[in-house]
Image (cartoon, rainbow, N blue to C red):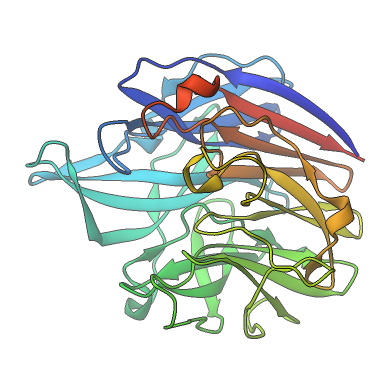
Length: 356
């Protein structure tokens, strides 16, 4: 595997930093979305910003996109966050999904309204996003969203979109959605995946198709560990098990998302973990590692680090699957807690290009 590392951004003002950097491909180039985070708070996000590139190597400046602007009303606002744009091959449309998150504007800093969450989506059209909308779901799946998740598009054009919902113990479900290039809607609900023994349940699920086994893989975040479940149809899954290596040892990932990369019939997991001389990194969220998957276990001898570790966490990252021979991983250095910059981090947005 060939790995090329580049920077799409660097530098911050000490008050806010860019997070949730993700890249989507369009018919004429690439679109990166990211948003600023208030360093003095916790998950206090601004409206997402956008930058573009014709080739994925030279990027323009970030700018506010009107279609992703926050909605404000009666002392509250709703912000799109945890947003992931990805090309929908069947329609040729760049479709982004994420979270519509409410904030109370009467407090300083603004406070999260956890009961005002929904799945947000937006469509790229003629150089900008159309105004974002929310996905209509049955009431049982609210409040919930598809923030920081990785979807899988079926050859017919239907979308397997994993979501998580409910508090204090979050449940996961994979939705089978229709998309016609304009509107996203739910066609079928998968199993409710729940583990009440976990502190906060499952969150930030991602799904892919593993061609080697002919099954779908679903990876799940929890406070305690990373988990994996398998499915024959993408909707109904086996009982999740903690990710392990082929030697039986547990993957030391916890409280951080994981995503998939595929090359032909080979499937890989991208993740963070303990045990990499990274105790100084928040929740051991750097560097990012990649390892090949064999029948829902990780092949330890294939594990490699694909990003630098410079003190800042990289756990909120995204994957752009361009072809069966190329995928990109993008991650922004999240500049919390204070002091992480002493290891060299400066809010760099890393673009890792993987080719086989």
